[in-house]
View 1 (spheres, rainbow, N blue to C red):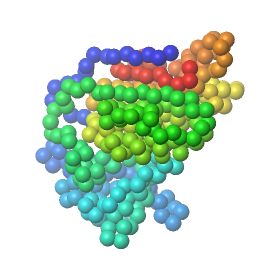
View 2: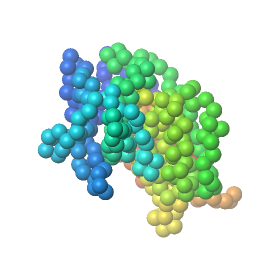
View 3: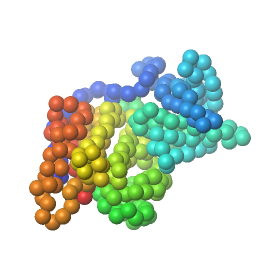
Length: 305
């Protein structure tokens, strides 16, 4: 059930990565202003906003729906970016002399990760060492895949599982029978953020959870993030069994990850194979006419199999 298929290198000399943003304004072919759709959480309301990052001026602006300016402050005034472990799409910007808090909910995991990367690269340029003007070099990405049926227990110190995260570029963690997803996510994210990792994608279904982290300096090359899920439990509706999928493109190379929890029991191989086929046939991302296992440059099927 674990399939890994490596496709030929399809990088084109001199080509630049596609940037998935609402708007990009350029100067000398280099983006200097990024605009992200988001929602501002304020007084129990979620207000539609646009978040503008002006790298040439070193400022962040919060725009109303009419695109008038609601807030404006310098990137260097930002003290910290706090993660909300209950909602992976949400962050809190702490800024200004009196440490004001701006709560933002992004529409996609990619836009949140890209925004965070831009702010960190301006605040701490040593975190993002890649020259955006340079041609993408031929590199070897080190991918770590971890799958674990945690049996509904609380989180362990992730450093016992990943003692040297700095060795890797991409870390995928697939957990099953996990009733404490937000607590596990908090433990994992708090440890990996210290090693310059950002959440790239997150998807869960019932007690299954799939999260992919990537180093900040790779974020600029990521596009086409997609997720999907398929339940194979009782009446094909209950999500205690089934699978979740996350995928993305790194420059011209595509990655797919599945976390699954299949039928249990020593004499139920036919049932597990049936679940595998159902998941593979039902979850369609990217090229919708193709099964996921056949369309990605690198594909990893993880889980309690």
